[in-house]
Amino acid sequence: MQTTLRKAGELRTAKADLVVVFVPSGDGPLDGPAAAADAALDGLVTASRADGEITGEAGSLTVLHTGGRMAAPRVAVVGIGDGGVDRWRAAGRAAGNRARELRARTVAIAPGDAGADRVAAAVVGVEAGAYRFTRYRTEDVAKRPPVRALQVLGGGATAAQVRRAANTGTAVSGARVLADTPSNDMTPTALAERAEAIAAGIPGLSARILGPRELTRLKAGALLGVARGSAEPPRMIVLRWTPPKRRRAAADQVLGLVGKAVTFDTGGISIKPSQGMEEMKLDMSGGAAVVEAMGLIAQQGVPLEVVGVVPATENMPSGTATKPGDVVTAMNGKTIEVINTDAEGRLILADALCYATAKAGATRLIDFATLTGAIVVALGEVYAGLFGSDAEWTDAVRAAGEASGDLCWPMPLHEGYANLISSRVADLSNSANKRQAGAVYAAQFLREFTDGRPWCHVDIAGTGMIGGAGTGFGVGLMLHAAEALAGS
Ligand code: BES
Ligand code: MN
Ligand code: ZN
Image 1 (cartoon, rainbow, N blue to C red):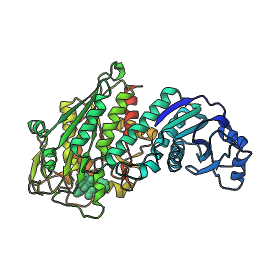
Image 2 (cartoon, helix red, strand yellow):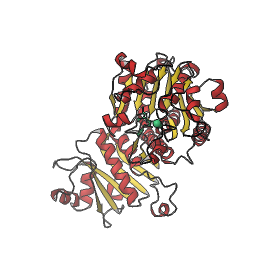
Image 3 (cartoon, helix red, strand yellow):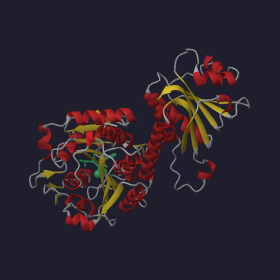
Image 4 (cartoon, rainbow, N blue to C red):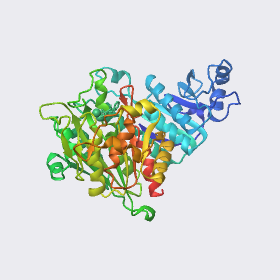
């Protein structure tokens, strides 16, 4: 949606299909835009509060009809609870969602004297709340048109901060579209084409796509081993952002962003149960987030060199598929016994991490992957699992997630888990025979391919896909992390 910053002005004359004001919980006096709406509507907000209908509870929303008393036909009064940044994000989401339900084409939010972080969170929230995956709907689109324009009436954010938030919201939606698109259309080739299209539109951002021939030359045997079973050729998508003027503080740094993109995970020969398998079209959510985040980082002109590496493949059973017990060799020469073909994510990430360090020059890494069911059991849909080899870098990644709302909770790595990744015939096995610490085991495996560089692994199996749909988890985190590393 087109997002613009306007002067606060008179709420009464604001032109939009839906005007949004924000109220905290409690029964303190109304102020700012909420008080202005109350005055314009002859005390209707006050009356609804007295009634207990408007509580200010975070994410709660009440729509009031203005009946000609304001230029806008409706006002949404949205709760921000204790007024924390995440409450503003939730409030924005509630407003965006209701705007879409109401078929509002233009929305105006009136954040009053809220600071930049809160205004930005609300903007990102509105975009997220208004998101619908409509590509395959032949009827609903005309009935539920997208929200076209968002006006920000005042608040403490600059035009650049509002633009940053709007760009973030757009990139998050972009990642959700990629994830939600089914695997017959979102193939490794299609994902690569999206990466190329993004790069074509932004000077300084380049895309390089490696196919089976280049991957064979690179000896990326782990990715090729997963791709063997599929009729769709694999791709290693490499996006590179080279800023026009690099800040000296980070001139020696290249941030590597790696994202798992299994465009469909059947499990391979170790096939998954059919129940719910359709959700495995979302097994490319990490890669989708990296592709869109690279576009966002470049669009924002972050003064830091960044490389995105996205291994993309299907994981299919077939006469040519890798079988349990087969041994593959990753790009760094390490051999892996494939005990379970459903533990394919760590295999393709192994080669992508090798590529990011050895070929693309990444000095520090973050990978995003819908990697294990175990992390869903451990942390559910709220926190992603965060593993890291370097305490300072891990803290920075966690802080970036707190700032963007992509919450990450620290998980351990330890020598003591090493026995889980040993094989009787190869350097490593891809699946432990003990049913324990499944998410840790996967992270411990990935670490073998990071060349000792500061690295974080974010397991987004719970947070990246919720209710059978992509969430765009990680996009905002990556922008924050890149900006922080660049010192901007
Ligand atoms: N893509 C799955 C993980 C997953 C599960 C993501 C549920 C989202 C929801 C991954 O490739 C997988 O199959 N992992 C296995 C690993 C096991 C075989 C060691 C798992 O978690 O069961
Ligand atoms: Mn799998
Ligand atoms: Zn998978």
